Amino acid sequence: MSDVDRIRIYHHCPRCGSTSTEVRTSQLVVCHTCDLRLYYNPCAATAAILLDAHDRVLTVRRAKEPAKGMLAFPGGFVDDGESAEEGVRREVSEETGLKIGALEFLLSRPNTYPYRGIVYRTLDFFFVARVNDFGEARPLDGVAEIVTTPIDGLRLEDLAFVSMKAAWATFLERRRG
Image: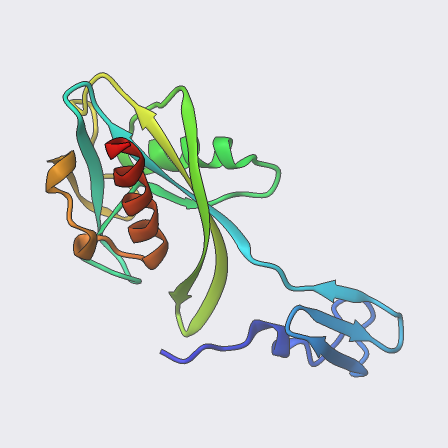
């Protein structure tokens, strides 16, 4: 899949409509007519490593591209006006129906998310959360299947994204002490 450089789509200024735009850096477009400075920064995304009382981990099998059929921690993009914590709670609920309480921040990682010919640059925030059991979990938005696995049974190569693999490796490292 080719990476459409989203910053280069600004042939017209989104404020005044002028064609006198210039891509100054990989993150900045400038309009020479109205002096708009438009910054292109990564999109915020979140995911939760969900554990139950029996130290099993819940993953979702992705129903759609990118990474259709691969396992992922429930999560997604943060909406405008949401904190990362609010976003991960909403995404977990939308994908699994589970409500989560206390969150422990694990790490953040840059990532890319290819979608319909455009590669979005993201900053992924990972949290750890516990629920009593996964009995109420069901596959909802964008989820083909709920998969629960003993912690030691989840393999890095089964996870959908590089950032998720890094988060899982960090989680396992911290767990081992």
